[in-house]
Amino acid sequence: RRPGGNTDRGFDIETGVELIVTRYAAWLIDLDGTLYRSLPVKVAMGIELCFASRHVRRVIRAFRREHEGLRRSETPSDASPFAVQLARTAEQLSRPIEEVRAIVDDWMFARPGRWLRRFRRRELLEEIARFRANGGRTALVSDYPARRKREALGAPGFSVVHGFFAASTWSTMP
Image (cartoon, rainbow, N blue to C red):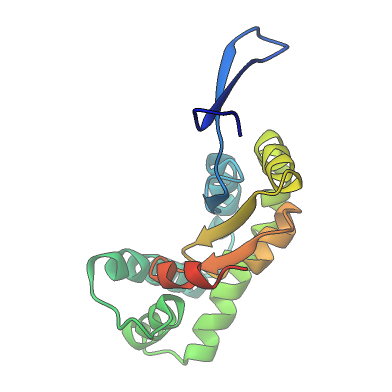
């Protein structure tokens, strides 16, 4: 750090624009739509979903509705929001939770992987890598389990925190 402040000044060599860089010990980074461009991923997945069975579309639609419902409701602090979302979706559709989990796993985690890597924000991932190389710590936040998306992006080195109620796990970050 420079004496007397928490910022450094510099210039972007390519544009000549003055940069002010704030120094932080850690970055908390939202995975969904931050580390990849979300619109092309959504479009690609929407096209794929058009060719899915009616049942699959119904499950995914109900699962997404439950996601929004969880944001507006209270969930016990010891409960996994993802598990609650799966259980509520299965109950709403009167389907076994294992069936709902398999469809959600395929359509929310496995299939998007090929699109995530293609539409990742390379410059941001490179900046994160530089930050880590200089001693910065990073944690990744997602509304869903993040391991497979992180792997699809080729973004190693994060302490993964998932779930919008997982803020208490920040204190356990190494």
